[in-house]
Length: 266
Image (cartoon, rainbow, N blue to C red; front, side, top):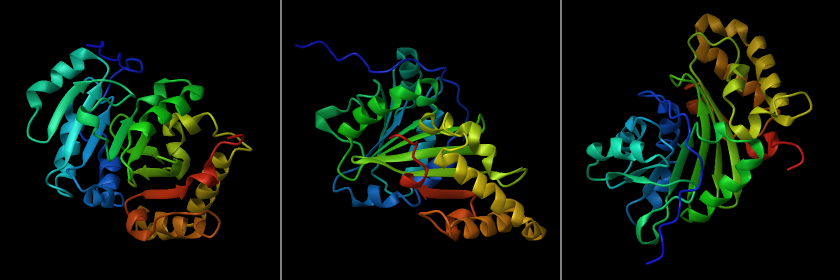
């Protein structure tokens, strides 16, 4: 028999916390739920590089079962000890296995969603396209790679949605309480954008414009930060191709078309 393919990737620091990825999970179970519902077979969702604790995979399964009861979540890690830590938590619809960006699944299965959070952050920017391409090759026809980054307790997060054709959108998600300005998320941009948050780059212009709209919406703060964010997003929509609306903005979430913020020269 041919030898098993060596996992593609490198071991990450593995730090994680319960409920850290709730913002992304809420987005997958919300605007992206149609991908799960449309699948003719039980959809497979991968938590790629879940880290030292399997808790994020367990939470993902709990949340997505509310969308589709037969969803299968597979936690994939490149570090054998982390896979071993997840094994005792396996149950119907939740499994753990060794692997990397090659996304090893059984019998030619293709994932509907691959969530890779705080994984590529530890890679070089020029390594991102190859990692994306590997996952894209494995996706189901309506599949999506979600490449994101967040802070240690999930109060600030951002992610790029990538389908089989390429990147689709950038989403930022912020906890309204204690928010100074929307661009506070800049230090948690995905690897494909974090080094591009400089003058002259589209993502910098987008965040700067959102900050200005946030400042002009200060009078709305009398009714709370949520109303202020709604007003800022409403203004920004006049100049930027936002892909969502007030129902998501109320959550501190905002999604913009990738073509508007993509790094120059790509």
